[in-house]
Every structure is written in structure tokens, then in C-alpha cells.
Length: 170
Image 1 (cartoon, rainbow, N blue to C red):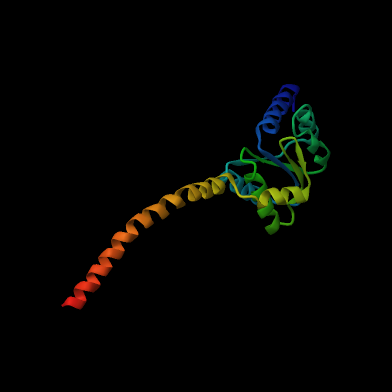
Image 2: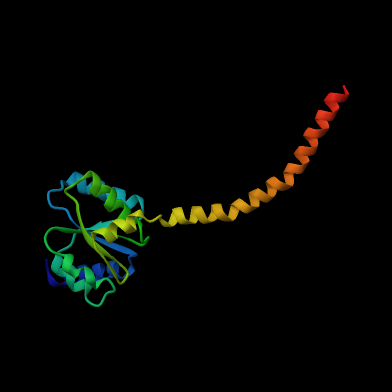
């Protein structure tokens, strides 16, 4: 790998570290190519990515970035999982590591906050952006549907009372 290519890779990694909502560092020793492709596909589905990079170049890219705290995790065969959504990458890696013990979560970073293994699991347990939006929309829409039900209820009550009176009269 020539110097220009290394500089380009360091720049790309720097952008990843700067713009990602969460970065999860995991050890992938012993995983097959098919398993890694499966992990990449699952990560793509949620808008995240997986990146395998030389640890030395990743440490250079981390210099001066908010998530510099993960530099000490970059030893051995490591893979970086990242996403703009602060929960998506952690959810996928956590779920995948449950089914595949070859993927070992080492930690990560969320902005300037360093995450240990328990921190990554806690982030993975949080609702995703889409789930939060859905719950907010549900909370906003619930009062409106209650009001519509309350307005419509008296009319249906009057109609049922009238039909009951009509049946008795007949």
C-alpha cells in the first residue's frame, strides 16, 4: 500500500469517526467471509456500515477526533461498525454477537463518550430513531382520536336509544 493510498484511507476513516453517531469496535477473529458478508448486509439494512482497517491507520485517523477514546481498543483483528443513527450500529452488532460468538464486542464511542461492552449493550437496548418517531406520532395522534371518538359517541348513543324506543313502541 503506497503512501497516497494510506493518506486517503486515513482521511476516509477520519470522516467516519467525525460524522458517525456511534462507532462500535469488535474483534472478528475466526469469522468466515460469508459471516462477515451477512453482518455487512444486516448493517446496510439499518443504514450503517462495517469497516475493517489497519489499526495503526485507524489510530492516526482518530487523532483529534471526538471519539479518540477508542484508540486503545484497536488491537488485534478489529472491525468498526458505525452509523449516523446513534443506536442502529450497536443494535446490529449486539444482535449478531449473540448468535455468533466469534464476534466479540470490545467497546465503542458515541460522540465524545467512550463506551465499554456494557455501554454498547445499553445503547443497543435503546429505541431506534424510527421507533422514537413512531411513539411520538402515536402520542400526538392519540388525543385527536380520543376527541373524535368522544364527539361521535353521543350521536351513536342517541341513535341506539332511538332504535330501542322504536322497538318498544312497535
